Length: 84
Length: 446
Image (cartoon, rainbow over all chains, first blue to last red; front, side, top):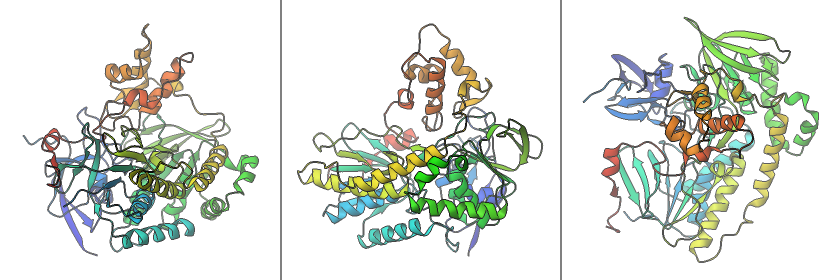
């Protein structure tokens, strides 16, 4: 099994081939995905892309962590990190 | 590339079965799937090198047969594509997540098979980190082959909780307890009716056997009344059948209060291809009866679309027997698992309990909106109070908000989730930049 990693807020998060960003973060012990626009903490919740509680910025684009496959070249950040 | 004649939204059992039927009738069909593998939530595929999670033999065999049929039909799949809706010109819009663009397809028919979402009743603290749906924990287990870590508590209502428990146990980390609002063992009448559905009985027996052998507490007729936290743990506050309160420190909580159709903002069904495509729904997004019925309903929808496109009429009787049987099984299950003492009224929750997580709106916020002399409609509750206004588009709060409105105004006709959500695309959030850059995926219709 190949093991690779993506960037998350200055950390290196290892993941297994085919794994989603959400499950790699969970395996690494990351349970809070930062604050949303209202300042509420976000987290993995429904696992099927419906609840929008696990939104993160992947290379600057807002995506649901639970349905996005991890890639080693990715930079994943909380929604609070703005890049404009 | 030529636009397909029929587009199927969703690669779960209903969508796959529908696509196979349509292709078998000679129409060009494509499947649009949000993930990069088929199966839906029920048959979420494990990542490379991970053994599939243990599953009852019947469902496992049915999925294997279905995916084999699908593979031999050579039906194209657009993976990582999110269905956004059908626009005023009848074009099917979806976001291609690989290309970061919104694409449009012209089709004669669309079969929508977007599955179910879990019902989650509001409880103080349900919005906190480390609280997920039980189904959310389950799909992650199916994907990774690992149980959620630490002390996990599952709570709510219904048979999914015991299924997730058994799967966690087999992966080496059983939950510390299951908090179940119903008392299925205390309902012998409904228990006998289960004997008419032997495959369900066998499946349930398998789960209960694991739970019994491992000594996992199955707290029936009990409610998770609140979730609190201290420096290190979540605290599950549980009211047991005898009325006593118990505080259980845990690391992770999985909530589940049943399932409902994921039909939010979906286009209405339309049985003609005049002025836009035929639109039919299939599977759990039409009526949430589980995978067995979803497959039968997918076949029904697929054949119905082929009938309509060939100039015939939709025949309502297709596939009815299996669906009716599944409906009866679900009725027996909901009687068996009916919450003891009835459903807990939402109006009994503390005012600061979050009802709408996306917008941070509480039970108290809704109460004050409802105190006005002029009674607000569901739509006004959304626009004035921002309930069901957020990114999930009401998937997790609209029904609960409507239920609380009904409790506050017992004399008025009971509002339903759709009164708040309405029915308009895009059915999922999409960036305006991607939307305004929408392009046709083929040159044929330009």
